[in-house]
Image 1: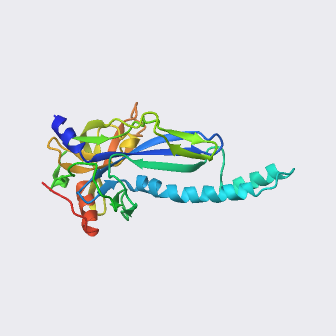
Image 2: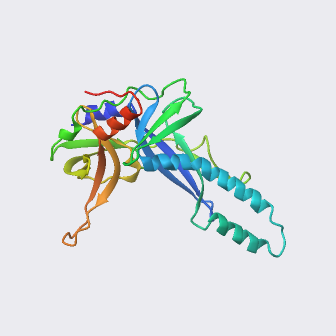
Image 3: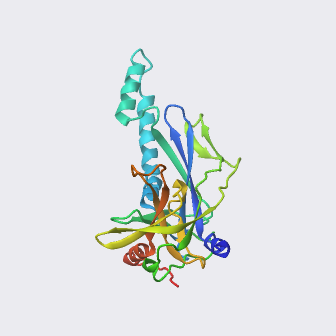
Length: 277
């Protein structure tokens, strides 16, 4: 049903690889995110939550660099451990604290001077604009449905994302006291399609802003496009819901997706080009 659509959507849907360092053990946590491109100008859609994680990496690095400078200045005397503990408390560095993060955009563009991030004032939605690239590494672009709000209960739709972080091309470098990407190991993460039925609508004072899908919203798929059998985009996954009714013997996990109209209105407000069918 979705075979051709998956091939079409995969041309412009990409993963972001993230690694995060835990303070006490220097353990590295790996995660993935999903985004999809809406034109040939390097503009991609993802969630606000994930965009904030991307932009937080730079500030996190500045904070850790300052911490290391202050740590190096602590005299090696009998009060060293006490002063180090006080410094850690001031920086809120405890055994589970994340102190460094690195992100890698996979097969998006060849290079960039940076990116501009626009976050929606209300919904979990962000637009990332890659700056000063010379070559696109994605093909084609999203084509939004003209009438996504008209989709009815019972319609089957599909999502395509990267929920499983199988890459391992990273390490902790003790000499530099940092985490880094390497040229060794597995550098890829498999794409993963997941279909589901429209079960309920998500609404607020503005009307229908999204829909609920009957299958789980896997975390790494937040930012994944939601599409029909023609590959037309109806929205974007931004989260999940777990049923929690006392009469239900088992919990049901369901995906939550923003309506494409919300995405298009936000793109319009930023004067960003997109396509419809």
